[in-house]
Length: 188
Image (cartoon, helix red, strand yellow):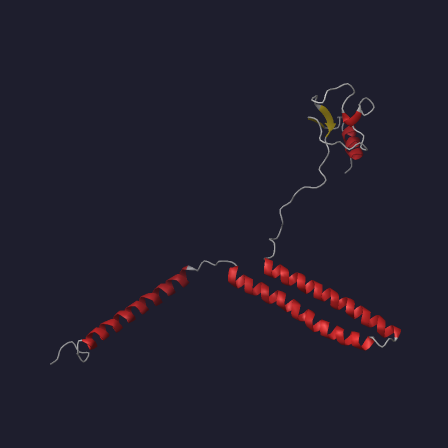
């Protein structure tokens, strides 16, 4: 909504356009008229006013409002692979169009361009797969850190306890063998 619409809306509602008092503007736009511009001198200040006098300027809506991104940025390796794939696909499409035009013109270059287009299609497919594989590898290495569920933790704890008991039994058997026993506790 432009400034004129804002003023018209404010006039329709019975009020004045909102204004904000500002201290010495940095660099006013000379081509945009301000409120009471006939009484003003150069640079948007009233004639005869000092540089430190506050200047009444209309409130303008900012051109854009910063919004947070909806999705996070792609990781660097994945973004590099995606850019590479887009460039390869673009070159392949240009090559296909040139091959088509050479074919219509009946040029001898049509056959080499068609062969190049087929090779470009293979390379473009490879590049698109590279993006997918790079993304999967990145997600596996640096992706979401999953917290194990309580059942998984309990099963792991159980397996650890069984392995400890098994190692303890093996160590006990090894001690008995080193002492020269046959594995029985008594020699009767």
